[in-house]
Image (cartoon, rainbow over all chains, first blue to last red; front, top):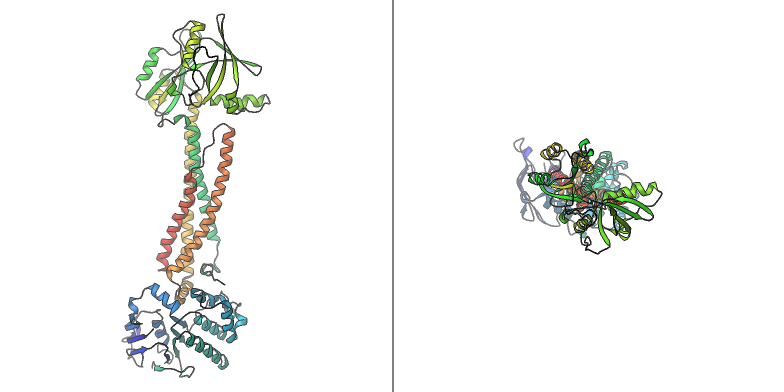
Length: 214
Length: 387
């Protein structure tokens, strides 16, 4: 699925100050299986971009096309299908349900497509060292543990794009590398691309394209 | 492992309101369905004599006063009086109850008792008249007795003698030895009950037998009319009542009581129905507000589920399936309770010779209909909120 951005700019930013960087009001074609790095300092709108790409916001001008189709033509049901079968995401604020256990949070996503069995999920959790936490309530987990659960949840679906909004911000180097290895493997298994936004330049993946937001 | 998204929405929320709403729906469904069945039962018991296009039948006689006792006026209806009755536009039809002019003495199981006979035209008889035929020379006389007599016999006379009640089928098998006498003349017959009437409180015999016996024993060619049965549209009509009072006609007390009982019962059932309906409306309002509250409280969770890929329609469907299951449980609780209660009530009615009315299809449909209405209301409301 190709992502085509043409002169996109979030409405609240228009006229507020001069728009700079390589994303807003520019044209980009993100080809299937591309690895895109969005380098953006705090406040430059990387979460806004992720929100637009994930259909959470439509307060923008310009044109966003997914596989040639303008997102303006997509219904709520179309977005539900895209979010369950095409576009995965790790939210910056994680969006986990504190009252549920880690495994329940993962299964909420997995049961939409039954992508993995329980054993396969446990195996993936082992690779991130969180298998012992699966039956714990998320409220009791640390920020780093929650972030790994959110990564696991994002991978439990068939996808052609994976959106990662500062996905390793609370992880140490060892756990970051484990998460990268798992994301690489699952992304390759899905023949998918990814878009990672970060505050700083990194070399977590072999990026096809690096874009600066400011 | 399957995570139920409705459980997620219910997590940490008080279920007391939903339980109260569910109990209210259960109670109101039971009350409304019961009132519906009771209306049918009441009609079954009280309107049995009104089968013919809603007509009612009143059995009247002339009031017995001092002048009647002194022989100054006749307790029987004259030809003119019957003609006057027939002229009244609030009376659809009139049937004379002809009486015997001789003594009737019966013997059954060693007990002797005095009896009386009456006859009425066949289209006023609310019983099967196939066996109600007599021909000259026939020793066995077919008789139709009032159901009230049977009730009195089974529930007053026999129990007082420490004897068990007699079912209708057994009564039809027995014969009573009869001695008809007057002025030294005597005729012997046997009587067999061939039917039971709710309409006429008497012992009916075929008209040709009564005329024959009257003629043989009394020499009368004109059989006297002691009572009259009126076919009317509305036995409670004021002009009819006034006419009967003015002419000093007595109406069979039972029929007046029946009319009054019917009114009282229907008012009582109406009150229960309104009570049930109010509970239903309150329960529906409570269940709707509970579901709305649930959605408002779970706004963030629902938003998160939608962001994960759940469709609003899918969330609504899951919610409705859970509510439908709850309503299904309510129906599964209500229907057997109704079945048990009304089968017990109907069995009790049978022991009092009031018949055994069937459970109506409406009784089953009412709780299902109520559930469907509630589900539709919730669907419309939830759809608007989640969209």
